[in-house]
Image (cartoon, rainbow, N blue to C red; front, side):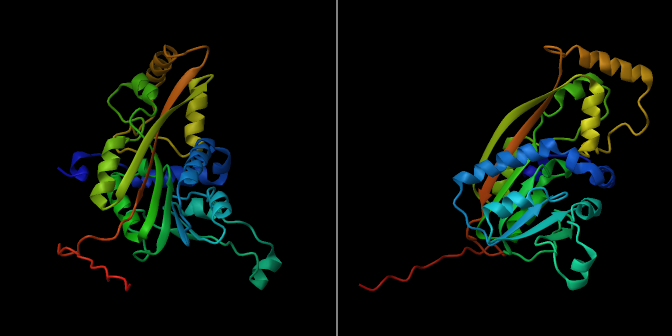
Length: 296
């Protein structure tokens, strides 16, 4: 059975768009967790030998990764893709009127509103696909991974992060009412299988657990809203949670308090893989390469 068939989940894509549109104007003050994961991803590039000519930031939000990627690879052309037009607009650098009139001060990064599962980009057009905390917002990561493979040139690198199944386990446990209160998170091993299924070579997966702590549950809810990270599953509760029910959730969460703080677990999955040369044609015929012998 393919990885695609093993997973089922129903993400409300319209709700994803609405949540990030609401968060867009002030997202730079609410994305502290994404920025920390971005920093840890960048550290992993220290062990990768790559000089990319073109970089695609898949799920770029307001473009907070652009500066560090540009600093590391100053000769590379950057393109950011995001489903949320509001996020892309909010991240556009401002220009004075005289600069707009003269055509000066234009952003050096291309920004494109597009679906990660259907990228309007040419095949083999990028050397590095970078994706920070995008995949868990998709109903199934496989189509987006396949698109990343398609747009990568041979020898190109995909590097991504996403959240795993233990993320916000305390919140799910506190509600325990049959509704979805977080996203559906894909297991690290399933993601590795998907990479191989898409044609990537030498996938490397690793995971770490980060626990944030809070004074109270309202502060956690506020941080999730500011980051656009409320549940966008179709199985979420669509009406308001009653006072009695919410009081029960608070009491259940309070039982988890340690050293005066409430924990919130995030299972962070990191992955990278390379695009190898094709071994067969689209119709299934094998490609056999013959090396011309060198002259003595």
